[in-house]
Length: 142
Image (cartoon, rainbow, N blue to C red):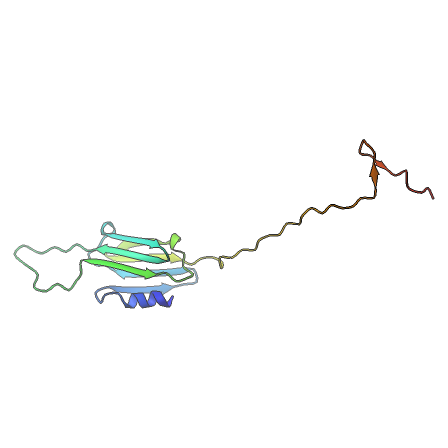
């Protein structure tokens, strides 16, 4: 998980993000003021979360930018922790705050492979006749 923490620290200063962890998973919270679900895309692929967001900014009539410090776009690729299951991730956005919930994998990914007992040809001393009935006539009548 340290790679994810470092990647969050490397996000631009204008992007605020938090990472939370529980026994069951992770929650990544990213502030994207001005962005909406329609202008934001979140992908889980190749062991990483990719966030592409675009914010809408309007300029009032008669004004122009003298200085613009809030970027219009965010493209971030964040590595998933090794125990995260990106295929089960969900995202939700409310008033420009993106929450990506990523469950942890259950188990360690290994499984016990059952071993079947093979058929053993047992040697049978009992002779059978053509009908399949046992012929015990060779036994001594003691």
